[in-house]
Amino acid sequence: MHSGRQDTVTPAGLACVGGPSASEATARLRQLGQSIWLDAIDRNLMASGELARLIQTAHVAGLTSNPAIFQKAMAGPDYRADMARLRRSGSSAHQVYEALAIADVQAAADRFRDLHEQTAGRDGLVSLEVSPALAHDAQSTLVEARRLWAALDRPNAMIKVPGTPAGVVAIETLIAEGIPVNVTLLFACDAFDAVAEAYLRGLERRLAAGQAIDRIASVASFFVSRIDTRVDAELDRIAASVPDHHGETATSSGAFGRAAILALRGKAAIANARLAYASALERAASPRWARLAAAGARPQRLLWASTSCKNPAYRDVVYVESLAGRDTVNTVPPATLAAFVDHGVVGTVLTGEVDEARDLMARLAAVGIDFDAVTRQLLEEGLRQFSEAFAALIATVEQAA
Image (tube, rainbow, N blue to C red; front, side):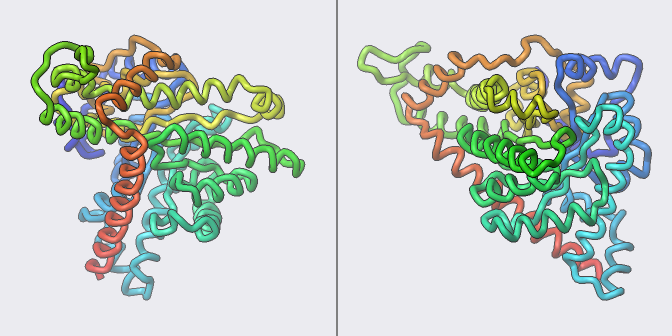
């Protein structure tokens, strides 16, 4: 079984993705209606021609970024001279970061411009995130999102907004204004449903105002591997506290034995994603969506995020192979892309599997997993991690002066 150790590979390390058969696995995903995007950015990725090559050989069809990705990139040597130059010119550390990040996103968007046109705006999209400090402030999120969208000045740029309650308010207005949105940090199906509703309301507002909705793009980034990491740890804790009953089912007293509890490891994330996908399919079949689709609207695609495998005991491409579905996106870090190109296999296609997924969630609840608490904690942690990465990024810029 392949481990997840390749996650240390940098964007430059993607040179291993190549050869005459390298594109077979990603080509299969494309045929099924799923797009592969790259979850990485740094200026060398574009300047070296590596991104252009990945577009051709690995069918990479878009790119996502976040504060942690930019922090890692800008901590390297390629940005130091520009950081120091801009700081000497009087720019604040935040202004320096923003200028460099915008330049990187513009460069990536330019590499994807042909694909964006060829797919009539479906793919070739590149995301830049609003400050994580604004996650609970709808009005400030709107102000920053509009400003970044204008500064990027690229039709294939996207503004990334966290899927908090405040973010949902901002998302509706941004869609109504025609600004493409990547909604991030979604862990719970309820949160995804709220975001999907905001997308529909935004389209309806735009249509009612007599504006076109046929080129509006949006994705909902639904996080995957972090779910298993948290739930598996809880299952280990619960299993350690019960007698070592064997078997896959509950005992006669209704209690789950240790083996039955541990057998649930590594399953929660995919079940949760399947439920979200089933919700998306149900929404796509509704009369409400049919009216919008008749006016040219496109579905807000689920984007599987956090798809690198954190547990070396699991197959390193499990969150790519298990989540191949039509009208979805999988954004993968460089190491996961390289691994999938090398040995990925696309078999079962995602169609919902609602009963199986619901049964799994019921079993998790029965052994003591509070899934709502898990997703709340993961959202809080995600916001905190991005805020900490952003703070570290600004500190890096300040030190370059």
